[in-house]
Each structure stands twice: as C-alpha cells, then as structure tokens.
Length: 301
Image (tube, rainbow, N blue to C red):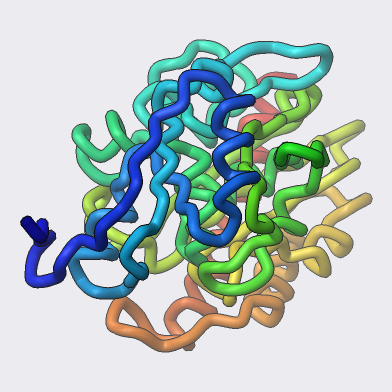
C-alpha cells in the first residue's frame, strides 16, 4: 500500500540502517546518486510532506542513527571532535561543548522544540546548507573544519568551503560528512552570538550571528565574524575582520566595523524580513556582540 506524508505519497524506497561507518560508506559507494542519507529526519519529512523534495521510486535511504562512530563528542589531539550524528540536545548538554564551544551549545538550545533537538543532528543541519542554519555561524566563528569520507576518500575542509549555494555543498555522491573539528585554541578567545527571529525558538532565523575575537594587550589579534540568513550561504565578514585586527574595541571602532559588515552582507527580502532590515540589523548585532566581547575581556583581566 502506498504510504502518504501529508498530501504527498512517500516514494517506494529501500531502507538501510548500518551499524558501522564502513558499512554506511559501502552502501553509499554502491548506490551513489540513488541514495539519500537520513538521521533525525527533521528536515527530510517536512520537505517530503510539502513536496519540496521529490524522489523517484526505488530511492535508497541510509539511516546513520546507529553508527556509533558518528555519535561521539571527544577531545582528539588539539580538537573538539563532534560526530555528524550527534544530536542537537547533546550539544546543549555536553560539558565539553559548553567548555570549548559555548556559542554552539547556546545556538543549539534555541533550535526548534525539545523533540526536534532530540532528533535533529549537527551534520544534518550543516548538510542541508540552509542560509539560516543556526549551527553554522558559531562553527564558522570557531574556525571549524569538517571531515568528509567516502569509500575511497578522506578529506578535511573549512566550513566556509563546504557551502556552495543555498541547499548545495561540496558533498559528492558516495560521500558522507562524518565529523566536525573545532580547535581547542578557540577557547582562548572571547565569543558571543545571537539569533534574531520572530520568537526565541520554533522559528527560522531572520538573522543569526557569532563573533570570536582574540585580544592581546587590549588590541584585537584575530577576529572572526560569521552571519546566517543574510547571504546565499552562511558567511564570514572578512573585510570587517581585517578592519578590526590590530585595533582596540571601543564604541567607535565597533561602530565602524558594524558599518563594514552591513556592506558585506547580501540579504534578500522574504516573508520574514526585508533586505534593508537585515542589513541594518547585521550592523546593530555586530556592534553589540563586539562590545560584549570587549566587556568580557576586561572582566577577565
């Protein structure tokens, strides 16, 4: 009997639930473009229900929820390593994530409902490549790299390389995002983030932002400013970062940096907000987050 999700028929499919990463990669290598990786299905089911994603009968679903290698949160050499199948709720509750990537834990806590956080995964949030993906700005600010594996490939990419267009990434058929690596040295800097939406949760971001700065002798040694929902992909404001480097954070320098960010972003007008509002709020939030970082730096000196 044909199964329906909402008004749309669910395609006939072959369902696999591998227990080990090697098994998952073998399935993807064999099935190639005819396969779809799923985990929490918090994006998959709604997209099929609305008819946004349509698949030919015979699609092969590879469920990675039972792959233990993809569910680890661990310290490995000089990185905090997150498996791609780590649940959003685990990011909220993990002491390691709270210690080394606090802004990521905070972002996850504001995503969806408790049920969504208990099902949705960090790898799924990144792989869908939404311009409004809430985990992306904190990870971009924290200099995260991702690991992509296939049956015959194993490579690391910076997160900004991974996103190529709305809904598109560098993942090729037969490949799987397996890990996210956050350098432990990120904890040496000051970090702040925020999300602007119609509500605190249960909502897609109008704009989200994360800032990481390292201060030495009152001056900014390094800076990373990341934003979501203001461009075709989640982005870094590199011109603003370069402007800030070597300067002391003050209301004046933060304001000038904010103006640069507002010129760097490339927002659109949609049902949630206008282009001009997003551009203005990118400046407002930049200034606010930079001054918070400066305050926390003074408090710890």
